[in-house]
Picture (cartoon, rainbow, N blue to C red):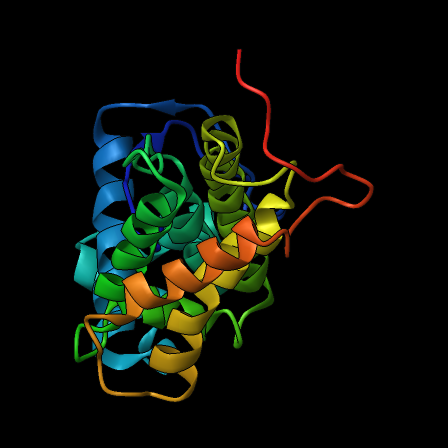
Length: 226
């Protein structure tokens, strides 16, 4: 559920006088350029943070002409948005472990591994960049929206298995499970605790079983099974 970039690319060239917009992706040189540029953005962002990220620096590191970067991505905000949108263009789905607590623990483990690496990484660098760039912030919101939509199946599976007493607010339950990791590791900068993913997942699952995330107006009680 962490932010990770997967690069492919499009063909054609944008009009530099108009905002950059998503275009049809193809292969070939255009795809290679996009891959090189997105990798350069990630490398520079991790190494030096937002302030190290300039169009000229990206072009130099990617080995492409600066006008290519300006033409296709215009500025740093466009580059960051492209990296984040590329991270959403994957086939990731939440694992099915057979229980709500197990599924939430697996999700939390992915978050934990992305945040508790002991040094700068792309996930934390992109989150930080979202506070410096409006385009990055919008793209980051799109990324998280997409991830939470994919993860809603965790809650629907739990309902079908009888792990929840009735229809539940999937977003609220998922946020309750994952939020402690972001709070501890990003905000408090606490020492990594390998038990945190399971502990936070267990607390959220227990609250779910108690009906804390029941959808408004939904009846409680164990779901009927065919």
